[in-house]
Image (tube, rainbow, N blue to C red; front, top):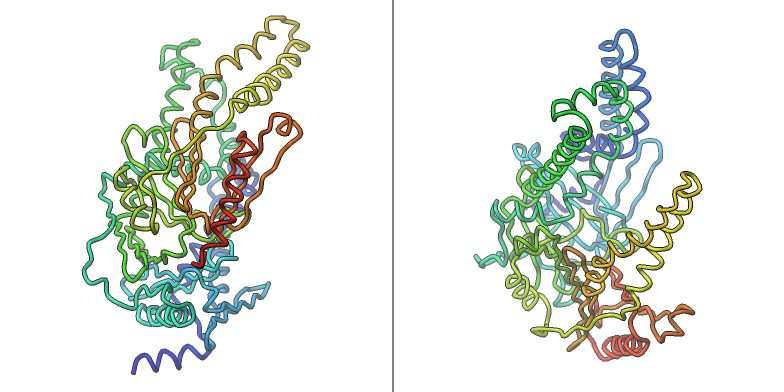
Length: 506
């Protein structure tokens, strides 16, 4: 009876729950910090410079809160959706009206999230992802959990009927108490936090605040204040160096803490299971995430880590699916990540998720010309230009030693990176490797390649070298400084597997 009511309700235009205003408030604040906050720096500087600072700041705060609440309510009020046969229709937008039609068969992923503020009311957010959208195509926030699950079941059932036996049937049947393929303890998540790129997202988050911080710090801290702080470390040049080192150590500590806390919030109680040819992932501390991924949708498996991860002997896996954003790069929001695995666990998951995956793929390196070209074009020539400019300004001849010192000093790193570039192909699979202090390994079935290119520059042509570019639906792979014979071998090998393999790539 409830299913009949749900279908009846779906066929009519509906509003989200009033509590979805909370979701829109969060969305508005996120856009504000991302786009508008840097432009607020002059206004805040004026406020701090005014005679009555508290009054000016209070006016700005009241105006910001009022605009956020009004904007969020209007977004909620103008958001409507309905289910029309095999598609989702959405109308939204306050001043600029948007009318979207999402066909069921175009939906790549449909995930259920339950933020902490929805839990007491049994409400969830239904995320709809399509291959062509940048991020989520739609967020239906504040739906009753039973209705969201019914709608998700409806979409997946349609895809199952129209896509054959490989369709995603996640949620249609129970997991039969299967043992999870992967779980993560707090210890695992700490390792993931320090070994992932989440460290550098610290700067992405604080970037909008940098411009504002420079203005405010310039007013609050002057040269005398800095010298006084340096005097606490002994004063003079040594005290200044120790102060700067302390500031850098504090920033690095904050980066690590930011990444670890983010990992715990996102992947707490992480569990990965496989049922009916579909991976199901659940995780989250304050927000519960329930996501699924069909095995045929996996375009590549990427395992990577940084130098800390190598020391801890952990790798972080990413299951590459069809890109949701521009330039063939996946949005971080949609990445299907398996955090902090040992090498043995990575190999076991590769064997399970990739059909007939060979136990090992022999690899070979690239030409030594990579070393010569990198040192000359990226080190020696730029540093020579800097030396010439420095000589014209200072008239000190020893600055011309700078290009040589730079080239020799960075040569070991160039050689290390050259050794890390490797590639190999075996039994219908390709493998690419690169790295410096960490590594990034990409494994992919050859028949899922969308396009392959072999290019030669005039200099490469003289040396019989080429650049191989492989385009997958999830990412692009490029290998330079390989022989033309190797590049053509890859191109014809990939074309042969595409022609001979009857499996769908997606």
